[in-house]
Image (tube, rainbow, N blue to C red; front, side, top):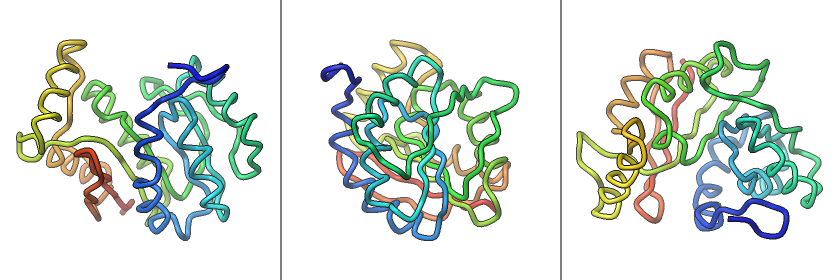
Length: 200
């Protein structure tokens, strides 16, 4: 969907304030946060003014960068860095620095190997104690948290069998393998969660 010359996500509009309520505390001491999969750019332009103490670094695949730049040009923010091209399938990630990382609604549209690469990449760029916040729907020990999430998972698998809602326990184990320790699991509206890891 587009609004004027900008891409638009209603989901971003719906979830931006609940997410901000959590990350405001998680990133209270951060100086630079790297967003993995910035999508339309709506989260970047909403979060940055509320987190003026840090620099927000958007990233996404190259095709999405023009849309992100359109949002940033309209917002005129001084604490958002130039969006960088990042594809988790790249053998080597671009040179990115940050003491925090954030990603929303990405794990369920990636294949599991891509999720693994995202976690390895995040672990590689974070310093000890740096936080990784991952937002989206998650399952628990193979069970969905709502009927709507079960339907959503089925629709994802119909589109592409490699996609699907991830199980929190699988993500927790993956984090442990790459020195990311699960610190918190926040319940947010619309059957979504925000998981927080810390770099060991």
